[in-house]
Each structure stands twice: as C-alpha cells, then as structure tokens.
Image (cartoon, rainbow, N blue to C red; front, side):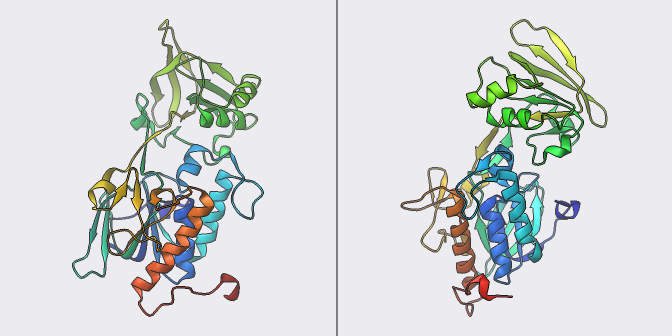
Length: 336
C-alpha cells in the first residue's frame, strides 16, 4: 500500500459506501462497490489490508477459495487489493471505527475513527471479522512500532538480509521462522515456555533449520534510536540476561479481539456477531454486515461465504443509495 492510502486528514470525507474492515470480505466489497459504480472506502484498525489472513497466516496455503486449488493467504489479499484497485477505493488504515451515527435526514451515516477522521457516506458495510485486533504487548513496543518492530510479516522480502528476532510460540511465529530461512540473515525465535502451540511438524522443521530457538526466554528491553538495533532478553527461570543484535523484531504473540465500539452503536448482536437478514441488513438503517462478523440462521464461516455476503450487501445497499438502481446489475462477464 502506498503512503497516499494511509495519510488522511480529518475530513469529512464524502463517499457512497464505507466498508469497516479491510479483510477479504471487505476488499471484495470494495471491488463490487466499484463494479456498481459506487465510490467506497475501507477503514481498518490494522496497518495493512487483509484482516486476520494477513495478520495471522499470510504464508499459509488456503484450499477452500473457489477457483484456486491452493493460494497463500497474502497472495489472496494482494489479488483482492489488485482487483479493487481500478475503482480507487480510499484506505483508512490504522483507523479504528469509533463512532457511527445515522444522519437526521435518514440519507447519510457518519463514521468517525479513533484518530478523528470523519467519513460521511450513504451506506455502511461492516466486514470487521471478529472486531478490533489489539496486539499483545511487549516492553518498549510503542516506541519502536514501524521502526523495526512489527506484529505480522505480509511480505517476507521486507526482512531480507536482516537479523530477525521472533517472539512467540504459535503457528504464526513458527511459520515466519521457517519461511524466513534463506531470506533473513539470521532468525532467532524465543518463547516464554518450552511447549509450543504451533503444529508439531512445523516446530520440528524449525528446530532442524538454521534458526536459533530459545525457550523460557522473554523480552526485557528493546534498544535502538531511530530503529531497533538490539533486544535484551532474559531467562524467566534463572534471570540470566543476554543481548541479541537484531534489526527486526516480530512480536507474534497474537491479538486480543474486541467488538469494542460496535457495542455502543445499537446493533442487534448475538454473542460476538451482528445479526443480519437475508439482504445482509442490520437493524440500523443503511448499515449492513458481511463476513465472519455477520450472523444468521445456518451461517457457515468461510472466506468463500464472505465473498457472497459482501456482494449481496453491496447490491442491496446500491438500491437504498439509489432507489432507481436494479438489485441485480447483471454478470460482470457482460460488462466491458
């Protein structure tokens, strides 16, 4: 993503459709909005598009997306971004949707991010997966975010020829350790216990690789000025300390998920999901939901299902935005 997609002023920005959540369903909704001739934007609390796929398993193969016998998570995200690109959706990344207020005239919805950016739109589609992701913290993390410390690695080559420290014991940590072999100059993985949550086969592959694995080890302090230059770690049983010279730190400790502000918006919810009808409409006017966050009888949570829900939401929103518009716009193969 270019810096132009990240640097946005307070607005207000005027759009036909705002999509809250830039995961696969949200990205496909942005494409379909463009196909319907609607201007759109995507707002997401994460710094990159892709949602859980990019944050949790960018290097994992996905086997249940129609038309792809298998595809890596990040490649799927990149393809979706490319598919939407001709319609120039606006990206509001690193912006958590904080307030959603229906307009007094019933024709608009206003959404404000936690950083004060305001978007006025004619409809909203919430595709925010399981809510806002908050990375589990590390000491000194805020001082080095974006300056050598990352929470996920969407593109492995960004760490080419660097000494990389990975913190974590789950699938993401071990996947990155394995896939960075031959790309990074060196890879060290530390975990606070000697038992791992990652798949045993992947653990054994990493243990057999050139990567260094240190157990019962935690971060004490991150050092550097402009960027990460070293990390002080300690053994949590003996308190022995050592300093690792690294230029990149991947905090793969997972994320806490919270519906957060959505709870205040007056949406009908069931457990951690938003209840929708067959048009993907919520109980709020001009507000729809699609993807994992949407709930209805018989719901199946698959990426492929989210794509269909996104198209359904966009088409129904289009008829609310413009009552003269047709619900079914025809097949894309008939266009062009």
